[in-house]
Length: 551
Image (cartoon, rainbow, N blue to C red; front, side):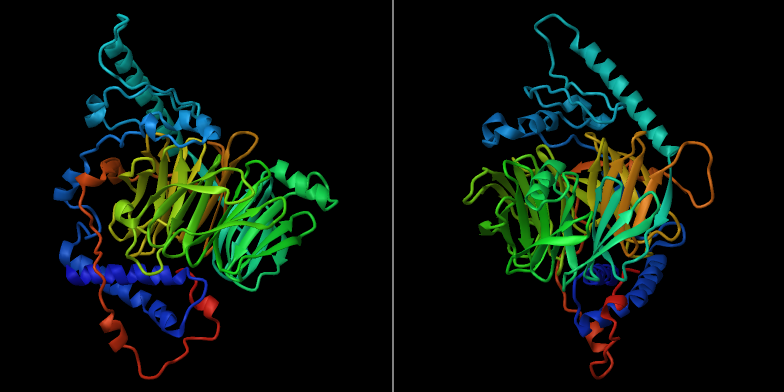
C-alpha cells in the first residue's frame, strides 16, 4: 500500500511539472518516466484489489462513510458582512441555502433567514428553508414538504434532460504547446498558450482568425474587459466603439492589451514579476488585478495604466484571481485564499477582508501546486489537483468538499460556473482518462459526466450560450476544443453523448469533519528515481516544449 501511495504522489508531481512554463533537464527526465510509473501502478492495483475492483474505487467500508451526506455549512452571520455595499445583490442570491441531502433535511439551522434564489436555469426552483412552527397559523410543514417534492421533481427533470444532451466537438489546431487560458468574446474564442502566442478563433467556422505574437514568455492568463470599458479605451485610441480588447499575462513580466479587430497590442504594462494570474474588475474606472510567481497581488488603473497597489499577499505563486462585483478572490500554489474589497480608490484600492491559509483550506503540500477558484456569493469553489472540489465559506472559514472523481488517483484541474451549472474537470492519473462533471447549482448535486475515448486533460474552461439558449464551451489543455450543444435528434458520427456515473450519486457533498483525507501528505525523497537515472546529464531533447505536453 505504501508503494501505491508513493507512485500516486510521483504521478501527481509529474503532472504538475508538465504544466509549468519552463522545465529543467531533471524535470524533463522525470516526465519521461510517467508511462513506466503508470504501468507499475496499474500492476499494483490489480494485485491488491483483484479483477473486480481496483484500488482507486471506494471500497465497501468507505462507501458507507461517503454516503453520509451532510448539509452545507451555514452562511455568514449578519455581523460578519463586510462593508461592500455594491455586492448586496449578489449576497441576496448567495445566502440561499444549498439543497441538503435527504438525511440532512430535518437538521435545518433554526433562525437562519429564508432567501429566495432566482436561478438562471428555469428548471431550478427556489428553496425556502423550514424553520419550525409558524405563529401566523400557516402550515409550514405541509408547504415545506410540497416545495421539497417540487424541487426534487425539478432536479429529476433537469437530470433527465442532461442525460439526453449531446455535444459536437471541433478541434482548433494552431498552438504547438499546451493551452493555459481561454476566454470567449462574442463569436470569438481567444486562447493563450505556453508557446508565447495569443490566438483568436472564429467559432462558427472553427478557423484561426488572428495570431497575436509579442510575448517572449509563455502566456499564463487572459481576461476580457466588459464592452463599456472597451468603449472608453477605444475612444482614447480613435478606434471603433465596437472594438473589443483582451488582456494577456505572461512569464515575461508583461501584461499586454490587444485590440481584436486590428490584431495589435495597444498597450504593454511591465510588472517586474512573472505574471501568473489576472482579472479585470469593472468598478468605477476599472482595475486590472495581477498575481505574480512570488505571491504578489498588484492593482493597475484601467484609466492611467499606472500601478496603484502592490501587496505581498501569498507565500507562493498566485495561480488564480477572480472578481465578483467589488470583491476580488486570489488563490495561491500553497493553498491559501484571500478575499479583497475594491474601494475604488486611486491609492491602495484593495482592502483585505479575509485570508484563509492552507491550514484552513487543507490544500497545498504539492510542489508546484495549482489552485483555481470560482466564487459564488459567500462560497468559493476550489480545485487543487485532488479527486474532489473544496467549498470554502469565505466569511466563516467553514469547509466542505464535493466528490469529483470516484478514484483517489483522480485530479481536478479547473472549476467553472455557467448558468445553473457547476462544471469540474477530472483526470485520472492512473489511466489518463479525462472528463467534465456537471453539478446543479446551488445544491451541488451531480447531474452527468461528459467524456470520449481520446479525451485530453482539461486545464482551462470558458462557456457561453447561443441565441437559442444552447451551451457552447471551449476547453484548453493539450488540445483546444469547442463544444457545441446539439438538438435532441439527428445524431451524427463523432457526437459526444452525456453519461452518468452511478457511483457519484452516493458520494456527493461532505463536511470536512466527516471524512478522512485519503491523500498521502508526507513528503519523501525521490531516491529511487534519482538512483535509477543513467550516468551523465543527458538532454532529453532540445524541443523542451514538445517533450512536456500533456499525455
